[in-house]
Length: 148
Image (tube, rainbow, N blue to C red):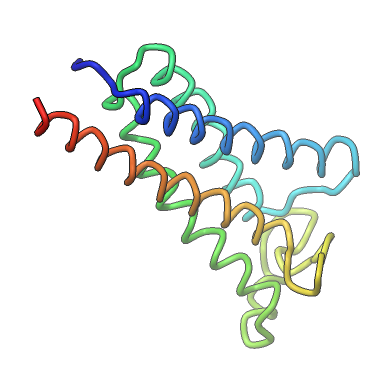
């Protein structure tokens, strides 16, 4: 419950903004573009959407400890996104993706910007950014405590 530095506050808001953009992006693709999420997309959403609330509350309360579950969720999200991307892009994994339960196979590629940027790639980048910024936030807090 110590005082947060201005840099820590900014990092926390940046993390929240990244989570919010990722959430609205996924909703855009499903609700506006009409892309039906596959099973792995749903798992990524389950890991991303709470981050908006977690980091939002942490920013409002100015308390980093509230956001610790965000580090865990983003770490798991990175792994799920990487696995999903492999299913879409690596031929040896593509057969696995066809066995996803539900209406849409996990190896379906709705978007393929520049030949490599897919929806799981975008989610993975968001999870990585959140994870790294959270580590920077923890480092900043440690520096702030040691400086006093």
